[in-house]
Structures are given as structure tokens and as C-alpha cells.
View (cartoon, rainbow, N blue to C red):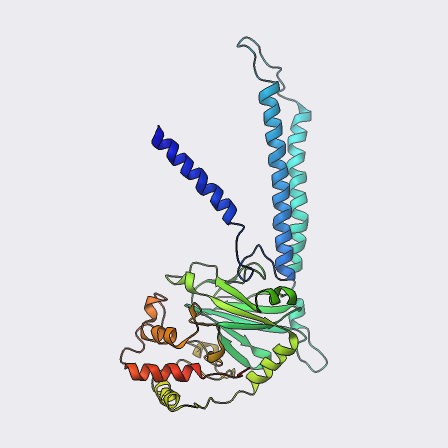
Length: 358
């Protein structure tokens, strides 16, 4: 009996901890700390639904308590008043759930249609240019590609967007089903290989300031052994800084190594890596040819492989044995013959890949 009691106590503690900790989370990653219009609307719906359900639970508990206390049988011979066939009660417990469903459905359906309206994605100005920013998101095993088709820019792993405006996304997959999710900015959207899904997100500048302009993105669909490590970063910056980033990327030229070690690294890269990776952000390859992340501006990235702190040691560890960090990735075994000095040179070259030094 004591063993069962201890187990139930442990289960109760774990249940309480799960409830309490579910509200914890950093603002750059938590869906419960909305940082944009879409996320705020979805968060408000969560609170509204939670409030309605809490009210229902309270009413049910009160009625149950009243029934147990006031109408309990005082002896075995007493028969309670029989109320079967009461049309009034049947109407009440039929109408009330319908009203609750309608109360929940109306704002939910309205928000769904509002957030599903991507007609502004195709609006163009007098010169035939899109009025809104559109980013094509393409998911791979286990990394993310971001194509600014109208701007002629292609990059990966770091999504750069302006704040205080709607940014539209075309989301698809290059292999299997994934799911594109930036928790503080809005709900997830499936990335499918057979079709393109569309939606929009936005970031409030004051919320971006709170997290130094960096939010975390995740894959929210179990896609393989490294699903949990299929991360990316979102840089949300003011419009003028975004315009400068676009100009830098559009004017980027072939990188020129500045050190002797990096020059040697460029030779290693051209011999071993260039068939899969590009080092300029120009969008001149067909989608089917993009087999590995674009490394333009790699030196300014937030992470290595989306999950490791951005430094040369982690970069070398990743190149040497990517399988230990992301099991099942397609880079595993690609560089079995690299010597330590070649690895040092390659890392030095990659860390110099900076479109802008600001």
C-alpha cells in the first residue's frame, strides 16, 4: 500500500511540475510569448478557449457538488424524484453545448480565414514589382533554405526579415514532410514535397529588441533521427537595416581569402565542397541542384549546422564527423580523407565568408 502511495505522490508532483513548467520559456522560442500580430491573435484565441473551458469545468464541479451534498440519499428506502423525459432538461443540455461551440467557433473561424488570406502576396506596383516581401522556404534533411526570389538572393539557416510588416512565405520540402515553425511568431505550417503551402508572419520591433533581434525556428514534424536538431535562426531587423542587408547580398562578389591559411582553405573547398555548396548568395541554380546549404555570409551566421555555437572549433568538429551531431544527415562521410591541416585551413576559409563585416 505504501509503495502505491509513493507512486501516486510522485505522479502528482510530476503532473504539477508539467503544468507549471509548460508556462516557462524564453521569448525567442516560446509560443506563449507572442512577438507579432499573427502570434498574438493565436495566443488570444488560446486564452479565450481556455477561459471558456475553465468556466465550463467550474459550472460542472459546482453542479456536481450541489447534487452530491443537497440531494444525497438519506436512507435506502427513499426514492429520488424521477425526471426522465423532461423536455426542459433535454433542451437545456442540448442548447448549452451548441452555444459554447458557437462562441468558440466564430472567433476561431474568423481568425483562420484572416490568417489564411495571402492574396496580398501577388499584389504588384506600377512597375510590376511585388509590394510585399515573399520568401520561398525549402526544407531539406536536416537544414533550411531561404530564397528571396524577387531580390535574387539565396541563403540558408539564417532567415533575415524586416520588422513591423507582413512577410509572406511559400513553404515546401525537397524530400519528405517537414514543418516550418517559429514559435514566437505564429503557428507551424507543413512543408510538403508535393505542394506549396502559403502564409504570412510579422514581428513587432519592440519584441525583437527584447531578444537582440534573434528568434529560433524549428522543424515541427518528425522527419528522421535528427528532427530535433533541424533548427534555424530568424534575424528580425528594422526596414533600413534589412534594405542594407539586401544591398550587401545583391552586390556580393566571389570571396577573396585574406590570409595564407584561408587561401589554402579555398583550395580545399574547391576540391572537396564546391560541387554541393555555393559561397555567393546569387540565385542562379535550379532548385533541384541545391543539394547542400548555401554558405554565403557563413562567417556572420548565428550557429554552425543550426545547433552549435558559431566558432572554428565547432565548425571543424562538424566537418570531421557530422554524424555525431545530426545522425542521418547527407554530409556524413563526405570528407573522410581531410587531414588536420586541411581541416584548419578549410575552417579558416569558411569563417571568412562574410558579405558584410558590420
